[in-house]
Image (tube, rainbow, N blue to C red; front, side, top):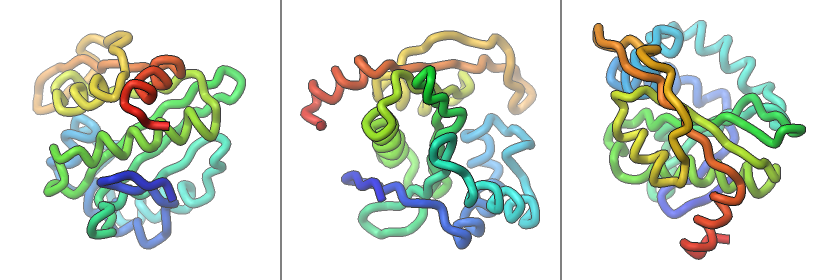
Amino acid sequence: MIEGRLTRLRALRSEDAAHHLRWRNDPEVVRWAAAGDPCFGPVTAEAVALAFDTMLRLSPRESAVFTVEDAAGGGAIGMADYRDLDPYAGVATLGATIGEKEFWGRGHGSEALRLLMDHLFGAYGLHRLELDTWSGNERAVRCFLGLGFREEGRRRAAVLTDGRRHDRVLFGILREEWAGLAAATGRP
């Protein structure tokens, strides 16, 4: 378990499938998490069960999905993951979704991502982390910039949501940038 002040990341469990099913069938969660991408949701219980069979067997050397819990109440509030971990290049892609809307805008998503960043830069000694979002998700953009990520590029008009085109915004952070932020904030 990886613990923070607001949240903790724990290993995914089979009973978490019920949360994922609920979150991935909530149109508002799907809109903000994936710009309404139908690959994210809505989804059937059978599809989530198949996905969980795979997620529960992931090798942490390549990828992992964590459950984000509220540190105060202990309940599952979201998910965080990393994927495409390349140990040779020292790179991984990460992401997080807070599915419980009452926790939106309260710092839980930012902390969950920071905990995951600390884990990947610390335990795995990676050189670079990357993630992306769509340009209409201003809360995610602010979160990523606040964590020290830099905007590295855009795929123009690559996302269609609510009948409008948005850019896919790409972000990255290097190990030395993360270390500098950790030193400036007094984190180990």
